[in-house]
Amino acid sequence: MARVTILRAISMKALLLALACSCASTRPAPDRPQELDLTMTAHRALGDVQADAVVRFAPGLDPAARARHAGLAGARAWLQVARGSKDPAHAYAAAQHGTDELGKDYTPSGTNNDTGTKLQLAATRADENDLVGAARIAVEILDERIQMYVRRYQAEVQ
Image (cartoon, rainbow, N blue to C red; front, side, top):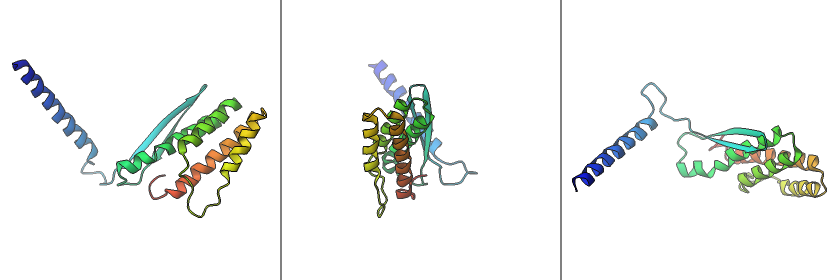
């Protein structure tokens, strides 16, 4: 019984110490600005190509909103992988992964978006074994969608 009480006391002290450390690390130092510069980094790899990409969040953006934008970091990393790949099949696959990870919530209101039609053209090229053409189109589409996403959420992400 005494051993359980001691372990609980140690665990409670460890928990309190961890909480104090985590809280202290989120407070800016007195000589630093009050706003934190929060970022998210995504790492993606395919074949022999790896890439890291960063999303910078607006100061004060709540954690739920930051989580909602995780796909942007992943999509940016996939775009770098696609651009860095010498294998057109890998480039096409990376662009597809990036498009999927970014999702469908990227278009600012009032934007004429024909990227879905272009993606169908890329798929047709891939079906015809024109992977160079398919990759070129898919990479362009992913880049275009990322740009639209950033315009749509410009108050929240960079």
